[in-house]
Image (tube, rainbow, N blue to C red):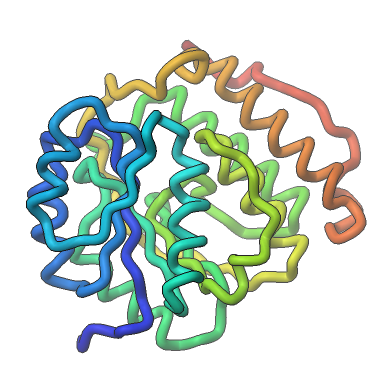
Length: 255
């Protein structure tokens, strides 16, 4: 596959000194245009990034996954890219999948291509902790029900965004609950969405979200609160079922 000049690869990093050099060197095999958002790293990530021929935007403090994603969309728009592919820097997303995203982009029939770790068979050894799987399942089921979607993985950060379709979405969530707002706003704007199988890789079951999100019940409630708030805000542009019977249910989450 030839490299497509209209695609920017966006990678948010926070204290990823262990992986950032290896990941970027591999990504550079598949892409020329790479943007890294250093979200206030306090380890040696900044120094390692200075040794890489990539564009780096640094947050002075940690602002969150959602803020980093919003910044990547904004930079892609300002620099005239047609598409942004986002991926993580913790070795859970394979750079070798970038050409697969690019080939799907070339079909030019959707606005969002979301990686799904559950569209292919996987070895149970790589499975995330049970509470994370349960939260993903619960939120994905609710999104599908309320937004008339057919997602299998609401949280995968390996995504492709058509910039002309996404740059005008009113997005303001900074944290890990960003996908809840994004999916609602994308459906309200009439964006076309598809999923792409990606390999399920889970290297570190002890990896922390930080702060209150480390408690699974609180994490689910934060996700549901953001989702329900957006459903109400966008109710006039969503399926009739979207904002009916909103309530919080964490009975299926086990610590």
